[in-house]
Length: 476
Image 1 (cartoon, rainbow, N blue to C red):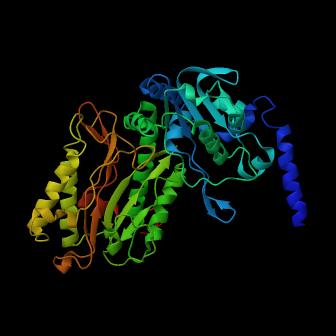
Image 2: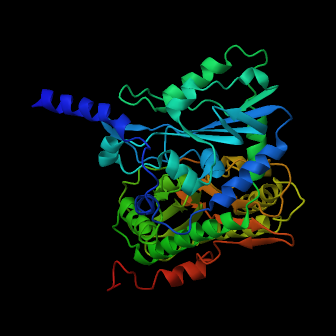
Image 3: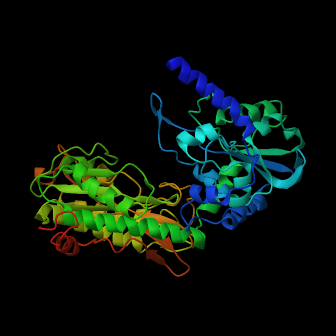
């Protein structure tokens, strides 16, 4: 039986060539590839490519790869997630692809353009197992490219990189594994690029393109903001529901499940990053993701969870006691963090240093910890607040950016925290209190907008919310 299956597999692979992109575009098939109607438009991606092109030096070419397929275990792969830079410039969600942008029009195998997309072939056998593919015709129709080739075509193409003075690239994707059954795979594309560039007189430039993309991606366009607001609104709903449904005796993963249910219920494709659900001592571990502890009494739980929607992610953190009532010590630390966040918000202004919100928040925390007797000198503040207050947010949870001055259109986090682990050099009454409050902020011409403000922040609002009925526990 195994031999028959193996023979059938290779027989089907051999038949692929008879069906690859030979038919005209099937509109019904393409509609089944893209069910969502609020994705970024082909015009958006075209505009972003043109923005890159304008910043490229004369006589230059840029090469950007899709993300590799990642193996989960044995013959099972992770759900595919596209390279954000590649998605930003193409809208293509499929693997085994590559984009070439040139400063001026060039000819590749009879097609004259300044942008060329290489995609994986249609493969009827593979599509039975892993879903419908765009193919060349689909990429032209849905993604708006006029010069589309298959990945195999690139290996045979006569593109001469020596004609360019500058070859701009991002670092080659890591962890790429060759697929011996697929001639279209990313490993083959990368090897073909290397073979066509390894004799260049000038080294590949892996800095300039990163700088260009960081500058562009840090300033969000209106079309991007619609998706970011959606991701943040979903995340806010999740945090509210987690407050309503939490009670002593629950495990961290049960609280997590309530939030991630809301993510999926509202259309989120992924979590923006592994959910951090740290109760009691685990709230003092900055990127804790085990989420297995059972919580009791008024143990605090720190929930750093954000939904991803059409590529864009939120990043929201709330901290609250499982029984709905802050102890005096918890309240003192929580309100200190809240005060520091408000101070950071006050520095969210276009034209000032990116680091200004952090400096403002740190100063408030240092004064507060000194006043509470937790530290003896303000310089000791980093014992309990050991991370930055802000980072850019977008297609990545830690989005690329210039990290110089704030600009209108930047979306950043403001997320101060205090983490007092057991055994810390202070009174034991403060031990195992970990508090972070994080919101997502849009920098405007006149100030800022807190996009996640609807998630309760104050002690009073949190305690009030936790008394409300949950969709999961209607008898609460």
